[in-house]
View 1 (spheres, rainbow, N blue to C red):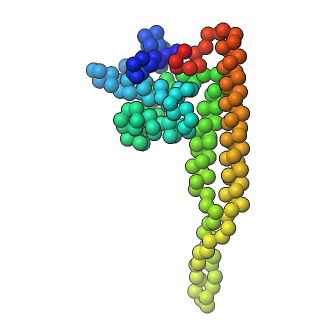
View 2 (cartoon, one colour):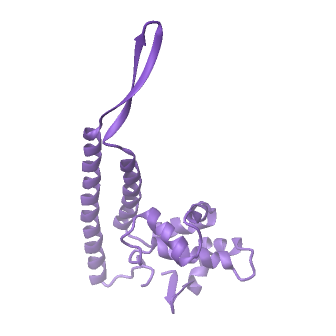
View 3 (cartoon, one colour):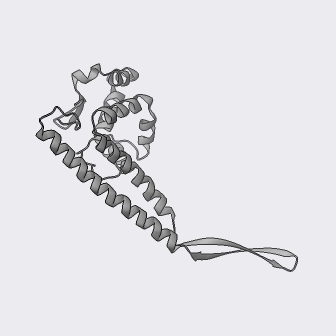
Length: 193
């Protein structure tokens, strides 16, 4: 556990300050009040937390909602936060050390599904096809709409398969967590533990 959530305030636990990734992020904030450090900690907490308030959202939506609703920033400000090398290192540490292998796979799958949905929205049921013909000595170019429903339906089926696989994987993650808890092993897979 590296984060604490008390009285609606996200903070880093004192013992977590010993982690090189946390120390580096803290030192990178040159403001007196450590405003950016607090903002980044809050961002990581809400975006990467397993059972957070945005758990049913895909990664890009979680990032956007966190920036707008939790940090009071713009919808696209998450891009700069995610590019910050100190934030990247702490997120990488969290994913590698505080989540199970199954949860890491689920996180990666969520990213893939998010990307695939963007790809799917770009596929139309019809597509424009360019046709050229000769009219005497002059080449004429025309466009017509042709059926593209086979490609669209194939993409929809693939997205359905991804969603089914995600449900199965999420069930496995839940079962793995229950088994670990029943063994009474020390677990740091959730922020609130």
